[in-house]
Image 1 (cartoon, helix red, strand yellow):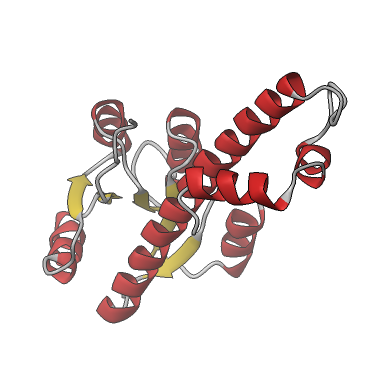
Image 2: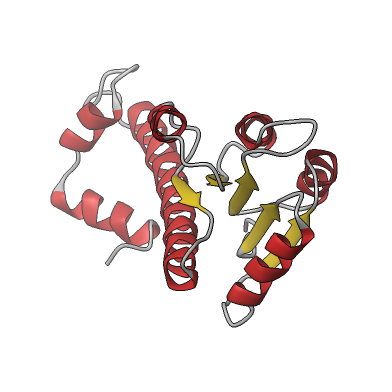
Length: 182
């Protein structure tokens, strides 16, 4: 059985009062909040913990937040990334979101309620994507087994769609039950 990842959120900002304000805004939420004042400490935390959401300030000494998020993506590809900035650059926001590196773009000063909703949405996105990955792995495993156990019905090298199309209603129901889908 795989280890369930705790709902951890990492927030990176070089301004201590911003970190404190964000932690205060999130204190009643049902997730663990970690903070880092710079990219170096953030990367150390990413080495020690699995995060569902990482929020980084864009303008920090030493490294832009978007650069930091790209590095974190390599180490934890499934993490949902959000960018926080006090400078409203529409072009930067569009580029970051369109390149798929950033899930949401937050502007300082933020609205606490909106921040909470964005983080909850990001955690839900993470959880759904991880569940989807597990289900796809199970489907691929079952497809492989079916392709090798019932060669008369399914040709070797068949796609998942071809394997599923070759299944009876009972076999589909059995697979769905194994996947936890009733």
